[in-house]
Length: 93
Picture 1 (tube, rainbow, N blue to C red):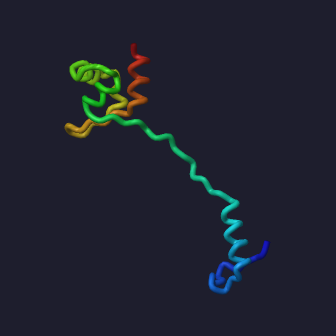
Picture 2 (tube, rainbow, N blue to C red):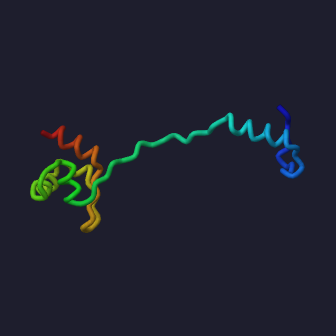
Picture 3 (tube, helix red, strand yellow):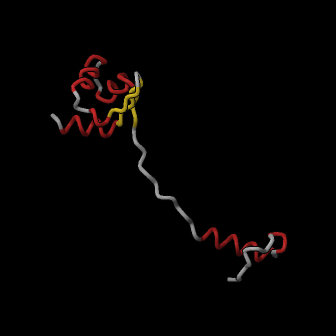
C-alpha cells in the first residue's frame, strides 16, 4: 500500500494510485447502525385498523387509557406507536 499525502491533487495521481486508493475505501465499509423503524398509525381509523375493530370500539379503547403511553396527540391529530399500543393493550387484559 502506498502512502498518499492528503493534500495531493487527484489530477496528480497515477491511474494505479487512484485505483489503489479507491480499493482501500471500498474494502472498509462503514455501515451506520440501523435503528428499528416505529410502526405508526394515524387517527381513530388507524387504531380501528390496528385492533381490527369498529371506530366506536377504537374510541372506547383510546378513552379507556389503556394505550395512553403509545398515543401522541396534538389537537385533533392522533399518532399511535402501533407496537407499543398492542403491547400495552395485551398486558392490561
